[in-house]
Length: 195
Image 1 (cartoon, rainbow, N blue to C red):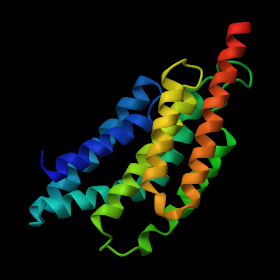
Image 2 (tube, helix red, strand yellow; image 1 turned 120 degrees about the horizontal axis):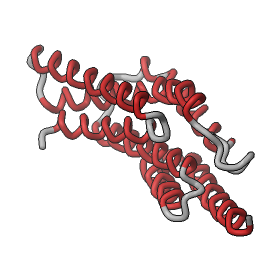
Image 3 (cartoon, helix red, strand yellow; image 1 turned 90 degrees about the horizontal axis):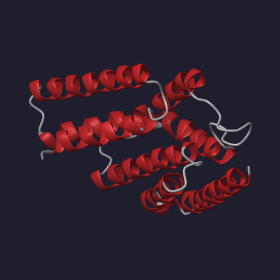
């Protein structure tokens, strides 16, 4: 698999994560839109004579810079499609997730001033952390599920902590949020069993 296809697949995985829980029409529309954007970007850069590494880096950069817009789109689209399992039992975004989303939004504001020579390793770690945030977010939505909710929360926590280990503060916040999310899943499970 060549590099543009790899980054295209990573982008598709991110889209799958943040469109989870929406209606089928919303999912299909957003996924087709993003797939078309990636295809057009690959065609444009390939037509300009760019190498596969440059194309892959461009896709990764665009995906990373677009996370803020994706999250805002998801919040808006999800308002009409999501439902609460129990009254107050499964709110769409717990406060720790809102803190992380705020950090992503603020961090995304600085993306235009970042140099284009960012190393590939740092870019891959940032993508891993972003995908971890998506898994964590999906786990919070599936928190009432006995297995997948805590699994996705744990996987997301590990990916965030691994991807942003050099910041020292973010891994600690990610672990605290992950433990809190798993405990919340366990409390909700006990609540459902007693009802």
